[in-house]
Amino acid sequence: MMAYCQAAFLLILLLPLSCSEAGTQKCMPSGRLKGKKPPPGECNEQNDSECCIEGKLYTTYKCSPPVSGHTKAILTLNSFEKGGDGGGPSECDKKYHSDDTPVVALSTGWFNHMKRCHKNITISGNGRKVVAMVVDECDSSKGCDAAHDYQPPCQNNIVDASKAVWKGLQVPVSDWGWMDIVWSDA
Image 1 (cartoon, rainbow, N blue to C red):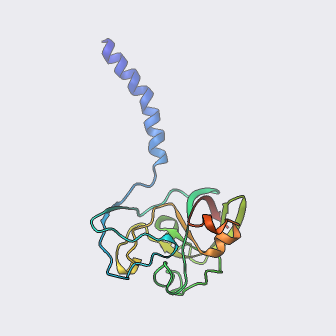
Image 2: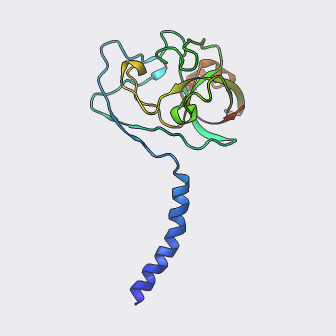
């Protein structure tokens, strides 16, 4: 009887913790993608972009963390110009954009089937704020193919930004590439 009571007591203590933990995990991985070796010269490594590794398993997502008035994310550097590491033209308008224009690509869930196309977001980091326009998707569900410049899928919490965004946040060039930020719809 004593063991039963202890087990029931532990279950009662753990149950609320499990429920609250489940509530915070709203975006689970959707699968894995096996990396393929890019053909010679086909993966643009500009801005320290990674190329897929043959046989490596990459986690994929069809969702992103919930959006709030201060959504935590990782800011990464991307070129939206023709020939840049962003690959092809932007998803929203099938055009290339100058690195001097504050534009971003959002992870798949935040991109939300193009519903954020040409909408502005406010990015806060380094004690500054910048408004940037969403023009592309940082695909969290696919990668390692020609359409994705032979780069792995994005993480599900990425704001992939042009040089203009990094300049606007006044981040020293030597620190460009990766930074914790918060963002919100503008």
